[in-house]
Length: 116
Image (cartoon, rainbow, N blue to C red):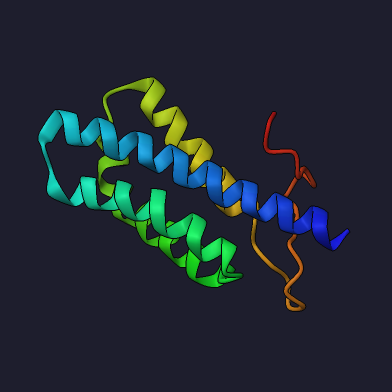
């Protein structure tokens, strides 16, 4: 069971990171913003490394910082597809909260299958 929960957490981190990398790449093309390129690099290189090292809290923090940084852009997003993809990342983020014992809790609906 613990392995399944860890796999779910890693999958959620990676799905969130991938969604944010897509936004960063799009934003880099659109605005040539250096900050967005830095976020894409951090998410693509640092999150997998932190997870491999067992630093789930640090990886979670990187994803959280990136999500917070994109909040303003999300609110002004013109593309429905882009807005939907970021919303999926936010749902994944919310679905991987931990309880007082450090166990991963499912989302409010009890779902832990992030491929739906």
